[in-house]
Length: 149
Image 1: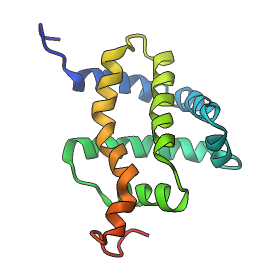
Image 2 (image 1 turned 180 degrees about the horizontal axis):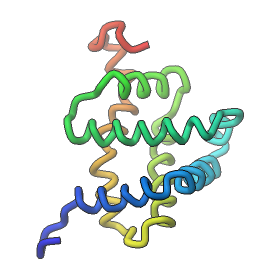
Image 3 (image 1 turned 90 degrees about the vertical axis):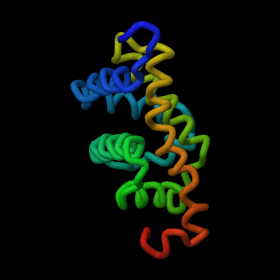
Image 4 (image 1 turned 135 degrees about the horizontal axis):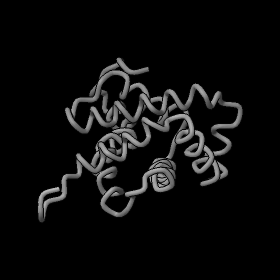
């Protein structure tokens, strides 16, 4: 890093490489932490194929990162956001627990984890998580037409 400059993209990318290199164990641990965060979350995942869910989560994180970069919500992200909010009724608090669980898990896998890393992830995922929290409002205003469900 340059002096007096924090490259949050570099911090994010370096820490995300840790997830990619340890994806199976990382996502196993993440779902354990996430399910322990709330009985409501545990109920949501009861009977769910966690192996499939781990693959879907990795893809979703990639779409959240792409949304951060482009500010364009592709059909995949819009559909996931809509389904989580309208069909699965994921609350804003659950998204906050998702992020906290992700960071707790990352702290166990990434030796350089600290406040800077957490902020790098927050900066990167916040736009997409805000979209997911607010997709119902966007859809209810018929901005997207009937294209999501």
